[in-house]
Amino acid sequence: MALRTFTVIALLGLKMLGVADAAIRTYPLDERCVYTLRLSVDEPTTCVFPGTITGLVGAKVADTPKEEASVLLSHASGAEYFSLRALKPDATAALNVLFRGKVYVLSLVTGTPSDRAVAFAERPNRPRDVPTLSEEELRSFLERAKTRARFVAQYPAIDPGILWQASARVTAYRDFTATVEEVSRFEAEDVVVLRVRLESTSERPVQYYPTALAVRVGRDLFPARLTEASGLIPAKGAATAFLLIHGSPGGGRADLGLNEAYSVIVPTVP
Image 1 (spheres, rainbow, N blue to C red):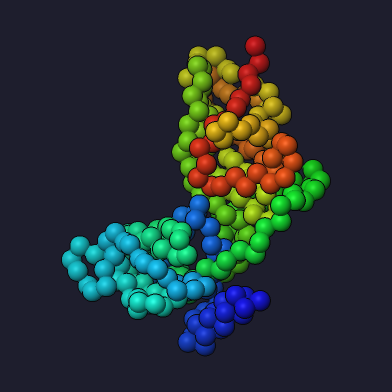
Image 2 (tube, rainbow, N blue to C red):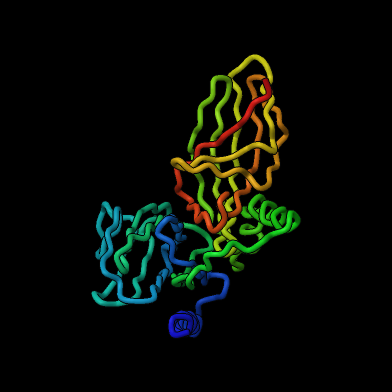
């Protein structure tokens, strides 16, 4: 309750300073994510953490305007917050935030509308039990992952409730490759949705079993609970497939992250 109160007070304070709702964002703290913050040349972006920040390590970031710097940083030692401002219209930079023994990665870009206030909140203790979801509910999560980009573009002030990251992990087969292009995660439900590009190198079409798609992470195999795939890769062509993973095969949470070394299992038709 104290943490939630702190976050709400911080955001209310920023609103009182004239910050529009559309420019305020709240993210759950997750060291497995890369957070992209949109900065402005004319307005500051203030980031608030739920406690004292241990350290800040940046690239193209400086606390005084310098020729090689793209982003100006303002931070007082022992504070729970820092502010950023772009020094160039096309600024790009990176910042690692050390907080409570973990590193949180921020990617900084110039963007419109800019993020004026960003609050990072600790997640409540996650239940170890995986909620039972019907096929209809699983389908709704898959659709939300598919339409995330369009939703964010249309409603930038509303949090879609999805952790998301682009990827480029490739699983190579004899006649085709399977590339994980996007990973979406729904934290509370322990649902992960992968968008996979299947690209053929063969002169003949490749047929596969769409309902048998799975992913391997290390030694663990996770069969897809739901798929959206055609079962056919065109000759010298490409197709897109979506896989939804929910929990672990043995029961309980899988807690698969956005940066896992996913290998896509594609059983082909003989």
